[in-house]
Length: 459
Ligand code: 5GP
Ligand code: SF4
Ligand code: MG
Image (tube, rainbow, N blue to C red; front, side, top):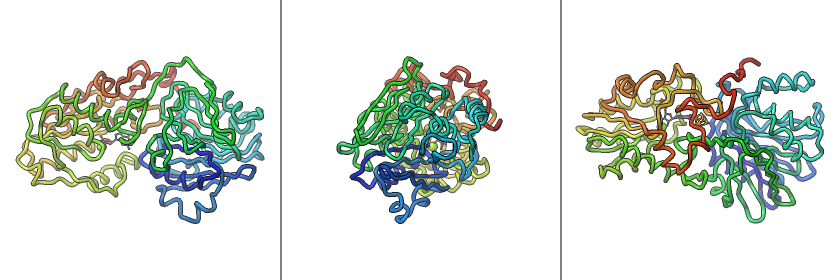
């Protein structure tokens, strides 16, 4: 998912939120929502299934006018694509709560089942099973007078990944889990402030990126400017390496690294680790582009576009359902026989999950006359599910689970297949393993109890 929040009375905050969500659209395409408020007035929320530009029309943005706003784009991690699970969630003070608020979050709680049971036992009502409603209910029913104090008390009780924005009618409060699993950055617009999942959202609205919100930190944006408070500290940091590899936009910066450049380095390191005898390097667009360039650059091989991607087909992986994914792929790529025909190809992609994309691409390229197809992947093999907010499916569906790279190559029909090593990933992102999460590759989950956590379907 993607989140955004802003306090800026002299600006059209709902319009800025709309554009920010537009920039974050790649983080979720199932639903979009905005909540806005006038200081001292009330919170208005609009959310619906669909893309940002399908959900909001001009008159909607006018109705959402205000001094502060938050927004969300949703990516389903549970497979349930329903209106009730769209965000921001809105809780009124009347429903057993202490304060009216709207909240949006990116991540996944691993103690949601326990927290839900506890809240139900206290008589708190719910309309969905989403983590965001649980967090919203905990903050809304908290007796503290100031929302920052309620958040500071609730944050340590939440386990898992959560980059969260919550607003009352006069403040936006944003916070990040103690491990900092999912990204969240702080930006400045004149003398006002905003927060976003990725810095590309700041670029589009003319704000400047200041810094990342720290793991375990709570920041408040209000009439009094910016205030920040470190609520949880000393936890093992675990920023998601998959954000650098694939998920985030290449023009975003995370931990000070421009992702386009980090992905280029992944390709260069992959070329060093697993060179290939080939005539041409092509990318699986768009996610493989920067690594393909790096790979070609490192080996001095020619590079070209061998596959054309239809821009108007959404990210295949995001639409739930295996059947949809399969069809989606044929719509998505078209090979260029004049470019790939008669060539020994290196084909660079960012990652393989189920292997559907790669299998079809290898076949398409052979049909278009390629002599050899050598797959090079700028990530290690994905073998374990993500419990922190990225939809990786189950181990059984992952093609690398229980297979060697040679077996995966055979399964996909490629002449060879090599993956970037985990050490290579860290070299490319200029980061340490001890402060990141790489559980989907290594199986080592940074948060205690992750794999024994009760599943949401237990609701
Ligand atoms: P596969 O067909 O192997 O399941 O899908 C892998 C392709 O989907 C990769 O090339 C990558 O670009 C993309 N992908 C990998 N992981 C994710 C993910 O978590 N979400 C989305 N939307 N796409 C992904
Ligand atoms: Fe990121 Fe993988 Fe860790 Fe999930 S398991 S947070 S996708 S690195
Ligand atoms: Mg891809």
